[in-house]
Amino acid sequence: MKKLLFSSILLGLGTLPMIAQSGTKSPYSQYGLGILSDQSQGFNRGMSGLFQGIRNGNQVNMQNPASYSAVDSLSMIFDAAVSGQFTQFKEGNAKINAKTANFEYATALFRVLPKFGVSLGIVPYTNIGYDFTTVEKVVDSSLSALTDYEGSGGLHQVYIGLGFELFKGFSLGANMSYLWGGYERSVLAFSSEDDASSLYKGYNTDISSYKLDIGAQYRQRLSKYDVLTVGATFGLGHKLGDDAVMTIRNMNLSVGDTTKITNAFALPTSIGGGFTVNHKNSLTIGADYLLQRWSAVDHPMTNPKTGKYELMSGFYKDRHKVTVGADWIPDRMARGFFKRVHYKVGASYATPYYKINGQDGPKEITVSAGLGIPLVNAWNNRSTLNVSFQWVNQSAKNLITDNTFRVTIGLTFNERWFAKWKVE
Image (cartoon, rainbow, N blue to C red):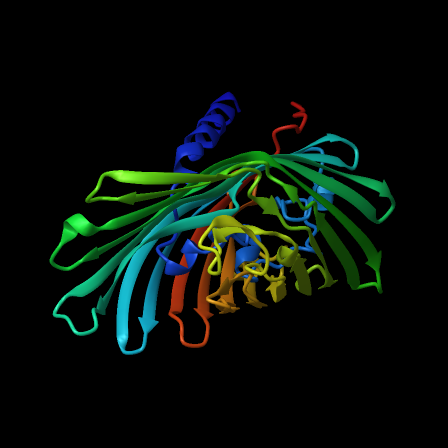
């Protein structure tokens, strides 16, 4: 046990620099705070991230902290995952491919009191990573105007959460997170024959704040074989209190100007709900809805009317996401291996949370499937290898189409650390 605990601590510490790496090369990550992470985990990524009504004491459902109260007194659960993805970007007849890999998350869950669970972990919030160049012919000239766009960064969160059963069937929970990160973005415009006349614009910020999420779940037996679980979550929207900085520099004249906007960033209020129905402890089906009120958040940008870098409204828009999913295990008590495997499918649809040149950004459609493979040793069979496959499409009218195929491999390490052994 000491070796396992020491290894787990090292794994957690080792993920800190790894999770700070960008897991995207999408040009859409240049907008807003970047590509939003769905924060799904190994057990539910095959269901496209279904989470509101998921309540299982053998998994860490950090998206609804009320689920923590389901963990039993003997379990110590660790969960971590990595992913690899292949993406094709298409604009008109032009296509380009990209490959990326990412450490997704690391979480843990254990019980401290009856019906009272505690979880902690580290997960991504947004990802930023792009590098591309546009070329335009100068009218009545043989010259071309080149513009290079480059950016990196993202936001990450480390959290501690608790969940407890207030009364039979009804649980509450909360995650308190430390949110940190930032971005560095640059735009470099120059002529194809005169690099000295290039104009540089740089945008950067460092963000450090908190994030609070609250969850609730209610579990009700419908019949001898069916159980309904209803879940709801609320995320507190608030100002992050960090500055946005823009630097403009003429590379030829070696002169520049810096503009700073104080208290420039904020998190949106989010609210969501959903349900699952479990039949004979074998088939689970469910649906979720999540609303993020981004329209109430201002964004630092250059005002097209005045040319000033300032906070402006109207860039963000409310984001709606609908998810459906299912998990089927033929017979968890069977001796046959394939009858004890979890088979998962899901799909989701999400609207964009920002606008590009006045029009809506890309909508997102996800279709997924996955397997939960039991790992068996001499005295325990509760640990699981989770493998999921996702196809993600981001598209908008007259903009780039982004098709991604993603494979995620996660390990849920579930051992009876707190069992009292009896020698006869």
